[in-house]
Image (cartoon, rainbow, N blue to C red; front, side, top):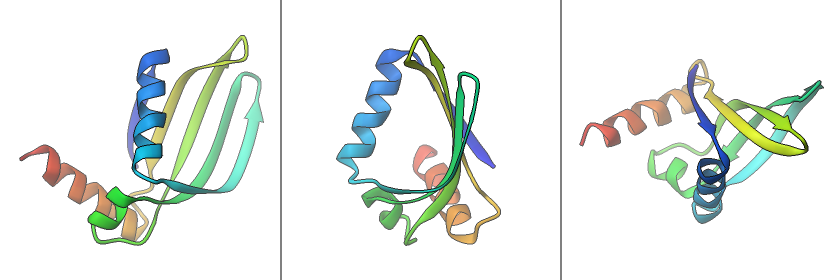
Length: 97
């Protein structure tokens, strides 16, 4: 899986704003709560995803909470999924430009 973590109020807020601006549509496939951690698998569609030439991607989120607030959000794309693998490759190409 390809993963990245977002920590801190400002970075988490920026990531949520980016997803809204990208018109992300996320479908929750499963969820689990354990103490202060919520994790789940999802599929997503968004403008950036379609720019990569795929219809949707799949991945997991692990969210850590403290005092009712999100303190960390770890996202992992499922590289074993063919469409998600295409997006990961596309993102790497975009970063190397």
